[in-house]
Length: 347
Ligand code: JFZ
Image (cartoon, rainbow, N blue to C red; front, top):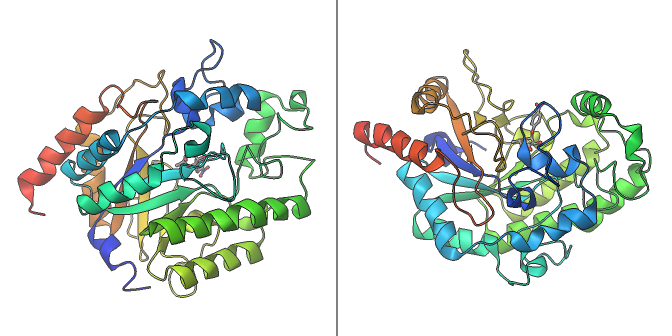
């Protein structure tokens, strides 16, 4: 593990990219803004209970080119970042590569045949950037036996008031009565495991970034499922890093490689094991047109410096629009961060 994390401890600063179907409307649906207090645009499908047929109608409006992808990569590099973590499948279940395990994917449903991950891997290799993938293993709102979709299938969304689902989310029990461990196991076996294998075998990722922010005991995911998945990753790609939001808290030998803190959490104390703060440039992760309260460049530079002094990393997120271009002050902020970093250091 020591040598596996060596590059990551050196390359402190990375770019997170959240881009999916919700980016098409910038987190609005049918004339409505995102429901509920938190501004996470990538949660549109859940928040506004967008029915699957309606959500899927937005897919063809996502469109990306190799040029736009390379632009993301050079923007990251110029900002002083050394790696990219791209959302390969978020909670909406939509994959950005030609997955054999699920036809709910970009090349298939945009009729483009375009493999976003392959293009990103090529751009990262060209510019000497490391590449990791975010993969939502717990929540999946597309698969009938994935977790979290209480508004489609046989569910009665009226059982869930806006207040009530918010509570169940943060208590760790996104409540579904129609999915039991056995059904979830089918989703796990048919979609999660084969898709993670496809990512490892097809794109040689430098890390996988999982996203279960509750300990597995509070979720439908079993410890056995998680340890088996980790074993598979270690066997197929011994150098691939794994973060703590896999749902395993043990860091180091026999466990995961580093701790991901809460969203936008910057500790004022030192932590002995490798860790990172995930932070986003605005207040949403995926593009949200109503999130236009930008933070100053100094906010990011200061938190980066503080994190490094405490032995940690910073993963700074952008949420590109449907065609891959960048909203508001995103590009400006990244370039200004880069000017500060490159004015003071080499490489
Ligand atoms: C998760 C995702 O749900 C979100 O869409 C985004 O991808 C972000 C990076 O991760 O959001 C979280 C993460 C942690 C908590 C809540 C939501 N938490 O600690 O309560």
